[in-house]
Image (tube, rainbow, N blue to C red; front, side, top):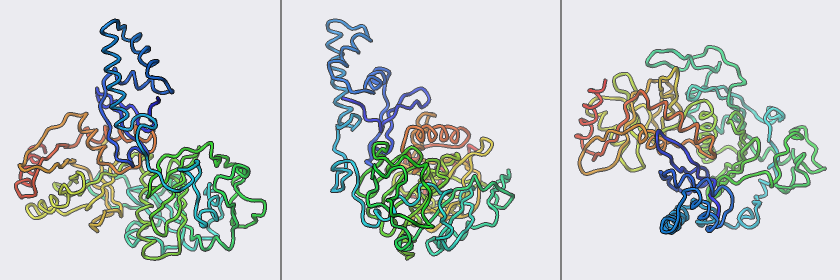
Length: 470
């Protein structure tokens, strides 16, 4: 038996947790808090080991004899059973299976469109993409510079509110500032390329097999000749043996290579594939011709890539509805259906507080001060703004019959806020970055859990408590 490496040990304050990443998050698996004994056993499970060998190691480690040794055998047996039930051991839980060859023999069978252009763009610097694309625009989204190459008919209307001539966010210490220009190094920008695959079909003949090991050094068949084809001679990470399946389910497959991620969208009409560098500075989308459906679907997929870029620049997105009160943003967060929007509407009615974002708030730090940054993503609410505002607090909602507040220790604040983020956590490094950032964000803001119904009384309760904290 061997541990599932898509659970990682992380320390939060004085406690140790086993937390899910990648596929385990996609499958809605939950983390658990563990003691030192469980931590020791987890470390022994790094390599395949039999149950009896594990028992022998633990008996020796804990110096147990007689009844103590028998008790260890029973306790470890119970622990292993618990880990299996939770999917924390390899092969201990059924994962998604479909008809693709990734499930059958380790390499996905791609549609004809995938086969046609799958190797097209592993490196943005090498691709003459500007010769293909018809448009170019500079944007500041969430205080971060973003360059977008491609037909502007692919872009959702709300992107227009974030367009700029010079990419930079003026880091003013004022409570509320618009994003304004003040110079920027373009190498720090996120570069997004959007390619209409119908334009490639007549210009580029690519290999028929995405994982063709014989052609891994170039990625192209001998007959491929095109002014539009990239030079990927240095990109040798296409070999199937070097890739890891991070996520694979009926909606999304994420493959990891040494320098990039490749994403396939199985049920998202019109958005076929994404090649993305691991730091998020480069993202290339391959789509059908521009249409309303493609534009909407691409809008949401761009957010996925943007959040990888944002995390590597110290920003995370909280699933929350937020209001502006006393010059600061207050974010109400909780699982879908707990009343985030309803609660913000209560505040708007009782205290005339405007709603800042109806569903998603990007949070980061400047000089150790947490801010909320405007982005075009806001769920179905249609409510967003292009401003940077100081964060006042995060209220974690939980449905209840009666209204009451719960004070949380630092450990719970970090854990509960992290659980409400929608940032993509595909590996241990991204988990550690996320936990570290959340730990800093919650240090100097108001964070409490509100057990509430959907009556005005809940609004008065949290309002009065916030006023006392100011």
